[in-house]
Image (cartoon, rainbow, N blue to C red; front, side):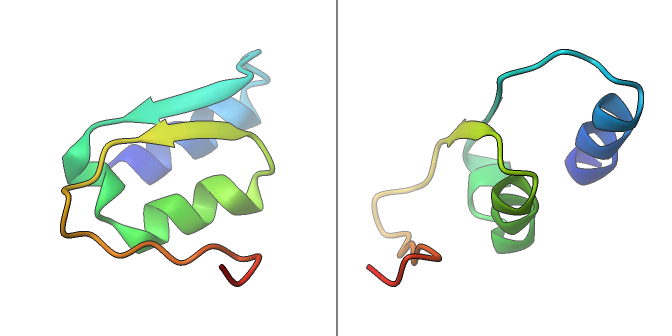
Length: 58
C-alpha cells in the first residue's frame, strides 16, 4: 500500500523532499529499495534486530 501511495504522489508532482515510515514499512526491504531508487530522502523505523545493508556496501 505504501509503495503505491509514494508512486502516486510522485506521479502527481507532489512536492516532497523526504518520506517517513513506521517500523512495519521500515522492515520491508522492497519499500526501502523503492525509496532509494527514487533518490529522495527518507527516514524509516526498524526494530533493533533488523539488519540493514546499504547500496554503498556498508
